[in-house]
Image (cartoon, rainbow, N blue to C red; front, top):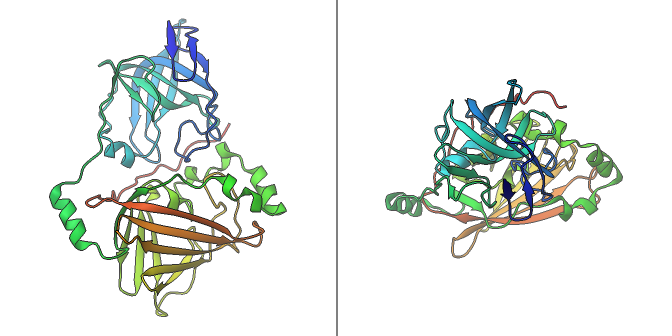
Length: 354
C-alpha cells in the first residue's frame, strides 16, 4: 500500500501505524500542527482505530482514538486538531463531524510534550471523506470533508456599512502573514539572546496557559472589533477572547501590570495613537522571543482612504532585551457583516511536558 503527499511517497510499514519521513520546517502560528517547536514534525504517524472521546474545547479540540494492536492490547491516542473552535466552526465543522464509536484512520505528527498525542493533519471518516488540515493533499480519499466560509447576509452587510465609523467596526483577517522572529532577532541584546536560547516550546509555550500578550494577539489571524466607549476605546480579539481598554482622558484608574499592559490613547487627526506600559508578560511573540517589564509599545491605527483595510503599526521599545526599537506594520481587511465569536472556552491544563 502506498501513501503519497505532495513532497514525498512512502510505504506503510504495518496496517495501523507507520512513520513517514516528510520534513515540515516552516515556523507557523502557534496553533499550527506542523510547528516544529511543539511536534516531531519530520515524521508522520498513521493510526487506525475507534473514536472513544471528543473534547470540543479551545485552544484546540481533541479527539481520543483507541487503537487495538496485533496482540489485542489497546492504546489510547490523543488527536489534537489544528486551530481553534472559532475557526473550525467558521469553516463549517462542529463537534458532530465525527462521532464516538466510529472507526477512522488518522495521520499526524507526534507531540514533543506527550508521546501519546499527535497533531492531527488527516482524518479518514467512515463516509470515505477525508478531513485535511490546511493545503495538504489527501492521503487516502478522493473526497474531502466539505467545509465552508460563512458569508454574511445582505442585511448584515448593510447594517455593518451603516454603523461603521472610522476605526470603530469589526475587522477581518490580516492582509499579510504574522511577523516572524527573523524580522527582529538581530536586535536582541546579549540578555535577550540568552533568554531566547532557553525557551523550550513544549514546556514554555504561552498557549498552554490560555493567555497571550501584545503584540502576539494583535497579529493573530482572527477578527478584531474596536468600539467607542466615549472616554475609552475597547479592542476585542477572538483568540483567547482578549479585551483591551484604551483610556483617552485623565479620568482613568491607576496603572496595574497585566499581560496586555496599561494603555492610554490620543487622536492625531484620524489616526489613533496608543501608548502601553506596565506589561507583565514574558514573551514578545508566540515563538519565545523575550521581553522585560521595561517593554513599552506605541501603536497606531488608521483606516485606509477607501476603507478597505485598517493600517496598523507597533513600535516596541525594551532596553533590556532589544538594542533598538522593533517596528512592525500590518493591516486588517474590512469584511462588512463579519460577526465576532464571544466565547473562547479554553482548557489550560495540557499535562506535564515529557
